[in-house]
Amino acid sequence: MTKYRNIERKCLSGHKHDSIKEAGHCDVLLAMKQNSEIIDYAVGTPIELIPPIMNSQGEKIRAMTYTPDFVVFREGVTEYVDVKSKVTKTQAFILKWKLLQYKYQNDKGYRFTIVC
Image 1: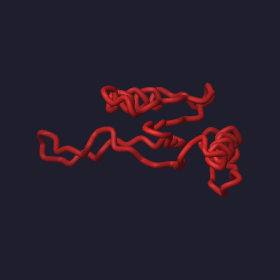
Image 2: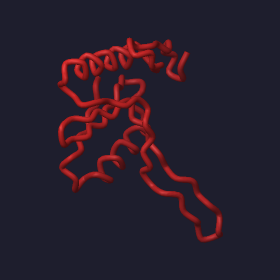
Image 3: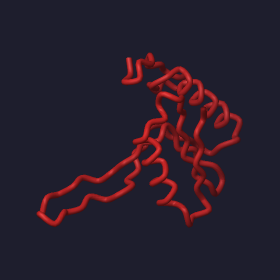
Image 4: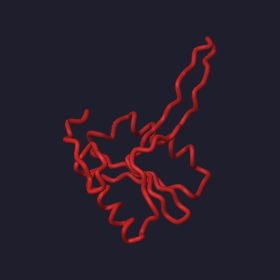
């Protein structure tokens, strides 16, 4: 069981997912890849939003990372996809999602999608 009381589920590719909805979306991506609609996709790839730093007291502060549910690779475009429900759309998610979009704001080769 996940932290949101969802039952972990495997998709057709054998990946473990935090919800039935997320596993279903992975199955859709697999079908899209098999039909050559997308080049490839990755599950659970962490992205560094803010690098580690040293504060004014000399203490190391670890990097801030975000792990989207999927990274989808299309011709000339990388798409970050997150599958969310009302319960999982937390303040922490919203902040990290905004930071991710800020990081790539000037690059037309990125898309950001929330599947509800």
